[in-house]
Length: 85
Image 1 (cartoon, rainbow, N blue to C red):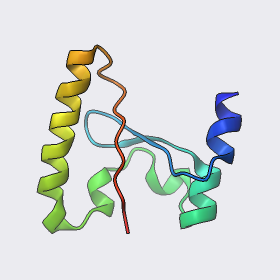
Image 2 (tube, helix red, strand yellow; image 1 turned 45 degrees about the vertical axis):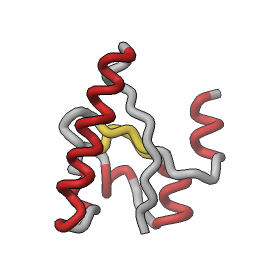
Image 3 (tube, helix red, strand yellow; image 1 turned 90 degrees about the vertical axis):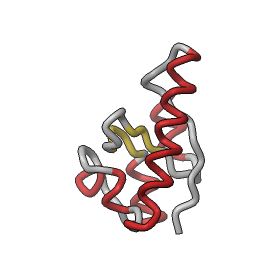
């Protein structure tokens, strides 16, 4: 069921680990909307697709979201919406 939802939704879904590396992307949607495959993202740093001038802001936001998720008891799941143009 999870796979059916993630592969057929029209939103890009990613899971990023504590080291800011991609662990999951819903590949069919990424391929359709951005031309990006698992091979292009999994295990690679999220900063590889973020402009150098914006990396500090993303890092600070990521630290905040990780801290918030730790206090909520789910340190491995961070939900965030970032618009990447």
